[in-house]
Image (tube, rainbow, N blue to C red):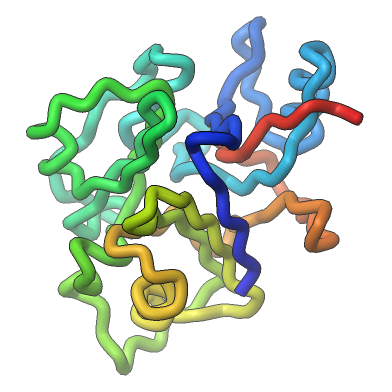
Length: 213
């Protein structure tokens, strides 16, 4: 597994989807280009949520306090609809992963938010539909929040099952709540780890903005 740990009280964690002209960014390079105009650059980043064929977010999406996709609470096809799913939310200097209905009940106003699914870990318990003998394996990425408020982003270096990926977040990363972001299309940008993964353009991108050298 490749793991990046972030402190939301210090690190500038954001989500990116479109540029100022409304064009979908889709790549780490285009996000870097957007940030360069602000004297910034990407610190770390990964794909930040499931998306439709036209790269619109499948679930709830908030960027800079503006909601562009509503919260989806209904069951549906695919991994996103494997309830319970959840929301990763950044509110000020606080980060959280909440099950979707718990998020709706909380009334939290997020500066940035992305909904995905399924949940990997819910209050210290693995998703109820994960099976130890499951055979579906993909490169997967996810995000969790530890009890100390640290954000942990992780991507598997080889194909893994949901059960083993969830166990990794719960037992190794010690995140009582963690959210699956995507599989198969998962990519990571982390220069310190020698990673700048290439592939087809993405939808939302989750990462950090840092001062350019």
